[in-house]
Amino acid sequence: MAANLMRTLDREQFEVGAISLFDPSGTELEATLAQDGIPVSYLGKRRGFDPRMFVRVARTLERVRPHVVHTHLGVLRYVLPYMLRRRLPAMVHTVHNLAKREVDWSGRLVHRMAFKRGVLPVAIATEVADSLRRCYRIDGFPLIPNGIPIGAFRQPQIGRDAWRRKEGFAPTDVLFACVAGLRPQKNPTLLLESFALGAASNPRARLLLVGEGKLRPRLERRIGALGLQERVSLVGVRSDVPETLNATDVFVLSSDWEGNPLSVMEAMAAGKPVICTAVGGVPELVDDGEVSGLLVPPGDVNALAKAMQYLLEHREVRNTMGKASATKAIERFDLRVMVEAYEKLYRAIIVRSQPLAYTRKP
Image (cartoon, rainbow, N blue to C red; front, side, top):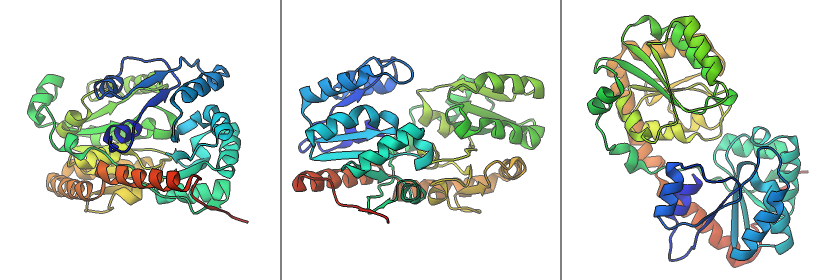
């Protein structure tokens, strides 16, 4: 989201650059930012808390002297001292998850102080906004839903049949896909068990898990125990997500909690029906029932299994839902809408030379 925002901001109004706490790791995203001429400072952070980052972040920002500092996820703790010392015109922090889940208890203390001292939180979904109110007792902050580059998912570089031949899937396979980290929040174990309980009984059904994480060894063992080595594929991190989604039949996300997941929007832009647990901002994206997808309760293995079985058996429903998903994505999720909202926010704060006012609840 941050990279897409930087790449799409109006360059006649905004000069953009990024700070990565970590060293470069050779990702496609790094190459794309470099190709677009967006400078990135890599600060070499160690795992865990690294106090060296306070100095390195401050030195980098002092060299750039930005009018706007926009932070994401858990990095605010390293940036806040500099922002407060310099009293920057615009200090923004996008909250990408439920407030109590975004950071640990110490991070929440930092965020509480930051929001009290002028850092403006931005919620990405109504449920995220509600969680901010509950967690930090603040109100009046903006809500700007995430956006995605719709065109990349509408026009993949490799067609469905060519991708399937390359990856070893048959044209008649019904391919369920999940693009998500293999970590507890996304609960890929629930997805695996649901697939085994229902859809796996059909020899045409396949499950594709795109992503990496600490749960991979556990999933590999469970796949072996279930005898599903030929039916479930753990393919790791992919650089061809638009092509992968285009070649699949159904997108599934089994998270225990969420903010406003980009992967769901991407799957809908690719014209896929989606099955998701009804958590966080997901119900704001997916029209439940036989519209654009199916929502099931979090943690409910039987409900998820039945939803997967239903779409496996009803091709016409898959097609109808997929068309509805694409229509909604085109109308609602375009990246330009998000970028224009942030441009307006930045300009408003800079003009006022102070953070937009929001109120603290009693």
